[in-house]
Image (tube, rainbow, N blue to C red):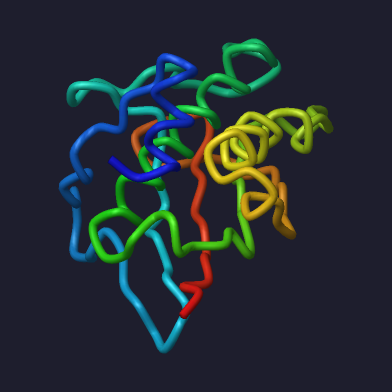
Length: 152
């Protein structure tokens, strides 16, 4: 068990198996010392949680949880190609399925950012983009992807 997994376990979080792609892509890929994880939504045991538009159908609190679950799934993807204890989270992108009047995307994506910092400590602090989207695959409320750096 890595230190990252231990920190998660201490917070009652268990990493799932690496998500199986639902389309034509791979979960994660390395390029030099960078590791790119594919976008993830809040899916648990094959069931999408918190589907819908944030601000009208989904509460801010539920969207935050959606981002948190998506980040956990991203960590599983990273683990499939790299030693988690050698990774530094570099960039997080969060897409929020929201109506035109919803402007709290950064607060939603904090669910992912705070999870990465919990898991990786200082190495989990990252640059970030929080974007409002008109729709996401299967009606997901949030999708998160991540770029990490594999330290030698």
